Image (cartoon, rainbow over all chains, first blue to last red):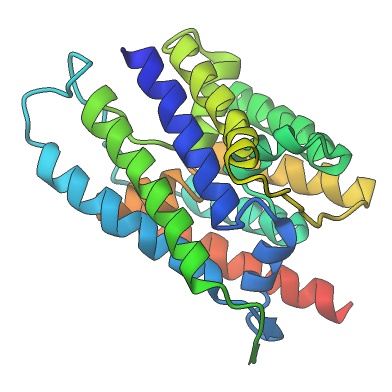
Length: 134
Length: 139
């Protein structure tokens, strides 16, 4: 069941990225263009997501176990370290340069767009190097 | 500031679906969705590899299924500068692994948990994103 849930959740997430237009880098850059022609739409993606995900998390986190798995796996790191800050800065810069973050980048593979394919390959190289050096 | 192209309804609808996906993955599989983590773990770790792969395949099937059901074509507009794409992709990949999360992992899953780390990360990458767009716009 875990595997079917993973596939289904990926599909729902991917459709959400399409409907919200987060898959479109121009839309994302419009959101980040706060001091120019600003498109506030993506704030609504976040609001829509959080009003579902946050109550669900708090309602179920104290249950004995998830429905199809033996235990919950929740990140437990609390420390505000330099990796968190430095990594977030690098990510923000890359996001602002192109307008793609990991979810929309991978989802856009479906569109056979050469630019987004180049971005995804480079992103995976980034994942790999960061995983091997940390 | 001048507001343009505002689409609150479709953005909210898409957001609700993303929230539903995060909620279901947690309630059923017990994990919080973070796409940078899922993608990089698929690459470097054997743990949950099949689940991680299936989630990524699902992401890619999303637009195809949407297209099939709605009959609407999905158009995106993206830079065609090779150097920008390579540098941007690398920064996104390396940065999100260094900070242990991206827009989904920190921005949605982490903020859902009221994690201070995620709130700080989200504010940081949003501000730097805004600053980057501002600098590129000027130059």
